[in-house]
Amino acid sequence: MTATDVSVSAPPDRFDLSVETLIIGAGACGLVAALSAVETGREVLVVEADEVPRGSTALSAGLIPAAGTRVQRAAGIDDTPERFAADIQAKAHGENDPSLAELLAHGAAEVIDWLSDTHHLPFSVVTDFDYPGHSRHRMHGLPSRSGTELIDALRSAAETAGIDIVCESRATTLYHAEDRIAGVGVTRPDGGVETIGCDRLILACNGFGGNRDLVAQHMPDISEAVWFGHDGNRGEAVLWADAIGAKTRHLGAYQGHGNVAHPHGILITWAVITQGGIQVNHYGERFWNEAQGYSEAARAVLAQPGGEAFAIFDERIAGIARQFEDFKRAEAAGAVRTDDTIEGLARVFGLPPTALGETLAQIPWGQIDEFGRRFEGPPLCARFCGVRVTGALFHTQGGLCVDADARVLRPDGGAFSNLFAGGGAACGVSGSADSGYLSGNGLLAAAVLGRIAGRSN
Ligand SMILES: Cc1cc2nc3c(=O)[nH]c(=O)nc-3n(C[C@H](O)[C@H](O)[C@H](O)COP(=O)(O)OP(=O)(O)OC[C@H]3O[C@@H](n4cnc5c(N)ncnc54)[C@H](O)[C@@H]3O)c2cc1C
Image 1: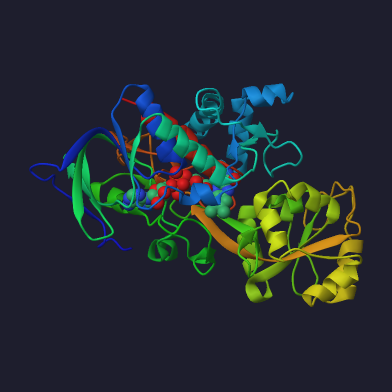
Image 2: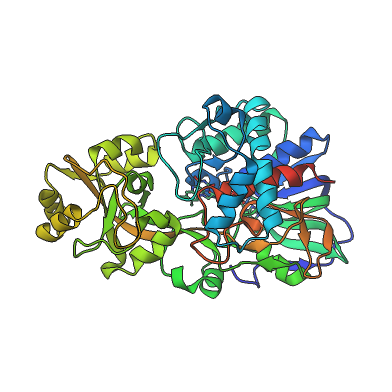
């Protein structure tokens, strides 16, 4: 999709239908916004391009970070929004607007508690491994640790609340007069167009990862990588922002992932690395400090011969990774290979056995290695496991700048009175590039900004 496929225009004389709150996109952000808006007595309509709402949310592990939730307290985890905001800022090298980081860090616990209490989503905290950059266990997920379970639970909550979701309706035209949004035009699969007027518009249509032109323009270093997000997220929000003079920021920011099983295309949880696993290249050698994070891992892996690497871990770690459906799928697909010896595992992947053996022998367990990584142990031992992996683009992190009400801003600091944005449509808190992404920043912005936008006046 290019700028010519989406448009901004003056409102028609009359709309086919009108609603108070119109939401574009039925991912996590759109559905949280809808549930929040109906609570305040508003009339809500969600338009969704796909046949069934899924979005990137369904592709994710569905883990939402939050500090100070009741589930955390019950698990004896002492955490605060201030500490969470500091972790977000540290990972993003202080590049985020501090007030946005604080807004998200302070709002997350309320969203998790509300989804648990009011909509009966059974969240629990991941406590058996550490996500890089989080100083406390604060990733909240549903039992299967899958985004499909999250989006299905949100959709069923929306159905129970009587929220109308109109599927197979892609918003393509934004109707705009002076500083107000009047409505949108949606295109149906048969090419028919319907106009919908609104008092408030919430952009919950995620970022532009599914738009190769925009990716090449804003993040050329990852533009050749596998696109692992939802293909329908094609950047209407930033294209409209350009046309109406809204402020955007950090359009070069993204979450990559350097541990996608290749060629199977299945996400291998980064827990296999944080628990003591390593990544090696075709020479059987390590090439970077894997502890930095999985987002920057994408570029590190793509820079290796063949644009691929091998995640090496052991059966103990595989046992932890099995709480993720994706990992079990990868095992069923034959992506996870095992052997009783490290040399045997090397042969499975065509790696030099002696070199891989030496790489493993050189790991300074309990100390810091030459790349700056601290290895806590226990040391890897038989039975050894490995996966051939590559780097992928997961989702974009830049977008429209919003204020504390999730209202879209202009470059001069003023706000559009009835236009809101959240999730991947808004500028998140991952700094300006790939290394600022703290685990969960994606759903954090979807859940918290969705909740705020839904309730704002
Ligand atoms: C493999 C993978 C794993 C991830 N794991 C995690 C994780 O564990 N934790 C985390 O925080 N984040 C994770 N993320 C990121 C996370 O999925 C996203 O940040 C989050 O889902 C964004 O939510 P959203 O509602 O903004 O977008 P989406 O869930 O993508 O929803 C947007 C919706 O808008 C619709 N849409 C788009 N354009 C239009 C239009 N013009 N008209 C109508 N509808 C439109 C789309 O079809 C889609 O349904 C992961 C991402 C991927 C790809």
